[in-house]
Amino acid sequence: MTRALVVSCVVLAAVGLALLLLPMPLWLMALIITVAGLGLGVGQPLTMSFLAEAAPPGLRGRAMSLRLTGNRLGQLLIPTAAGVVAAGAGAAGVLGFTAAGLAVAALAARGLHRSPSSVNRPGREAGSTASRRGKP
Image (cartoon, rainbow, N blue to C red; front, side):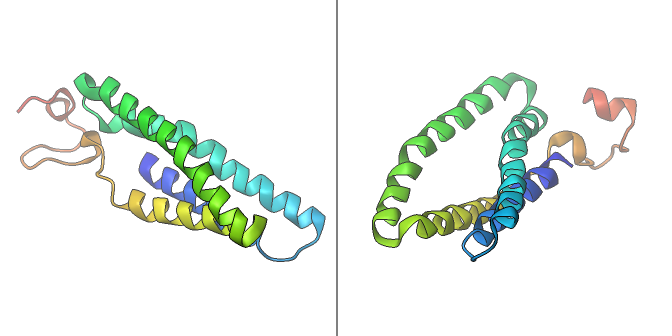
């Protein structure tokens, strides 16, 4: 469930930013920016929730630190790339570049593995006590 919500939020943000490339009245632009911001704002905490569900208890700290490292790398590289795009294509190019990046991220996120708790293992019934405790 969390994975689908993460992907939906990223798609919402990508579509919102892509729509900003079109000419429109100011009130519509404000509405689209609000919707895109919702997608971007909700996606951030959802990735933390997704990692907490997907990572085994002993590896959650490592998963969170890897996510943070990816965030910091993105904060370094994406503005640099957006500046290069803006130099040639202007502000509309940056919005298109960001929308395309979010669309690629949404496609990549669709391939993420499901959390172990949502996968029904052979020989175990979903929802059984043994299955929740990890015992045969």
